Length: 63
Image 1 (tube, rainbow, N blue to C red):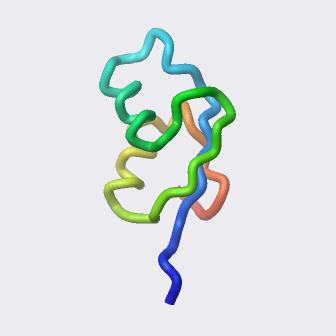
Image 2: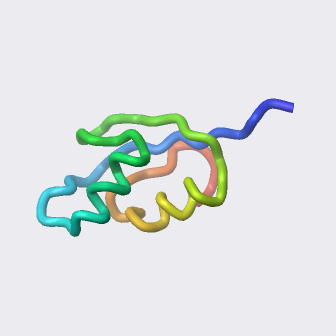
């Protein structure tokens, strides 16, 4: 069975955000607007997405 993945796109700027939110975006492999990253669908990745939900959009699946 193939490992599930989730695609996320950065839609918000990390400017004037807390450092932890900027670091979370870097952890999600996002560092510029409109970049798309494909990541494994794990609870830790879902938690990171939830932390910066206002800065990213989930392209596949429901968050």
